[in-house]
Amino acid sequence: MKMRSLWWRSVFFGVLLAGQRGQACTNLLVTRGASADGAVMITYTCDGAFHPRLQYTPAAEHGPDEWLELKDWSGSVRGKIRQMPHTYAVVGLMNEHQLVIAETTFDGRAELENPDGLLRYWDLMRIALQRARTAREAIQVMTGLVAEHGYRDTGESFSIGDTEEAWILEMIGPGPGGRGAQWVAVRVPDGYVSCHANKARIGEFPLDDAENCRYSDNVITFAIEKGYYDPQSGQPFRFCEVYCPSTPRNRRYADTRVWSLLRRAAPSLSLAPDYHRGEAGAEPYPLWVKPDRKLSTEDVFALMRDHYEGTDFDMTQGVDAGPHGTPNRWRPIDWNIDGTTYTWERPISTQQTGFSFVSQSRGWLPDAVGGVLWYGLDDTYFSCYVPLYCGIDALPESYTVGQLSKFSWDSAWWVFNFVANFANLRYADMRPDIQAVQKKLESELLALQPAVEKTATELAQSDPELAIRYLTDYSVTRAELVVKRWRALGEHLITKYNDGYVQDEKGRPQEQGYPEAWLRRVLNERPDQFRLAEKPDDVPESRLVD
Image (cartoon, rainbow, N blue to C red):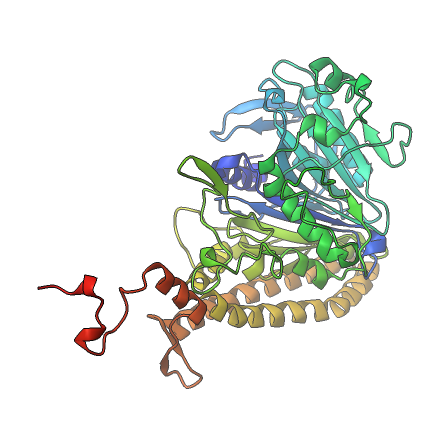
């Protein structure tokens, strides 16, 4: 049990330490009809100040008297639930049946957190992956558990995908001493994409369509009792506004990311920024949209690499981007000057990302082959996604080791962090160097995918164990080769960009200085300090000294 829970504790403890209870994630859901190859895809950026360690949990048989212990961060047992006779194997956040679960925290009404509940959101994810084969089963497992044992967390949005469907489940607690949770789950229509980013997104939902929508019995009556919703108001019941009311801050923090994902997937809709900028009367963004064209895996990689480039909110532009156009802004995200509160933009791609993934679930292939977790570490913009098939039974070592308090070249997370952090010195210059390596590696992995899967499928028909070995060897070897190449990239960057010089192709240091636009900003602020006088008469009188 200790080993099985290690990865979850290391990941989510770090997120809690990040200062916003894990409120730092982004999810995109792509249905079969919206993807180029017919896969259901789920994306997840898990953001926070933590060092993730990838974990594999094997399938297992359990006796009638076995219990699953749930522990807090100190290792103390806070409760337990009865084990199931059989639990499924899990790689990261995808199980052997191609079921995948991701999340973002929306907090919502603080008074609804229940310290008397047993289950936190990561408990629900872990247990559902071990017990469910489909998205519908996962919803049943998760909501059944909180009904029986209580929900301990604040508001949470879950993305749940299998080979056929993608669902969003949103949940919030009943407050101290309460029972169960209030929740609603909706199926994303086939051919559409959806997303969420730390703010509840489900608005109105049908009460008589069990095929496409499920909800707790008290989701509306509880809100009426608490005074959150007045049925006599003439306003429709909207889960998101009732349990996670919009504010200027959460619109800016969360809805800007939602807007950017949807606008890039469906440019023809010309979605305006008005809502996330807090314009009066602006309509919330739709829960899902039909993309202008079907999205490939590579397209989805690109969607998760976004700093609002090309918009009025482009984080690579402006004095706040520094002389070399870095989109990264150091925390805290909110700051106060002369009694006025300001906030940096919060992008989809952020230096705070611990890990991210893009999943593929494909029902026409054997489960071991059809489920792929394209896994990346650190900032999505400067990471490299590697394929981890859901049928593998071992992991790349460098993805399973390391700690936040000590740098190590043996840790894949630290290798990717080194490159991404060093790039902040001359971001605009180093970006092409990094993206060239990223593009080459990811393109090779995507090009190899059909041949690898053809071989694995053939092996699965004759020798399933050999197919698992083949996929495991491929996933592990390729992931370690990517880390090796990224170490070399880091060494190249620190050599090429050294002491403010930029080496040319012959290794000779060249002076490249600062962009003219930034130099003009410097002169606007201090017009005389750096001026070089050619003769005494050119020196401003205020600068002359007797």
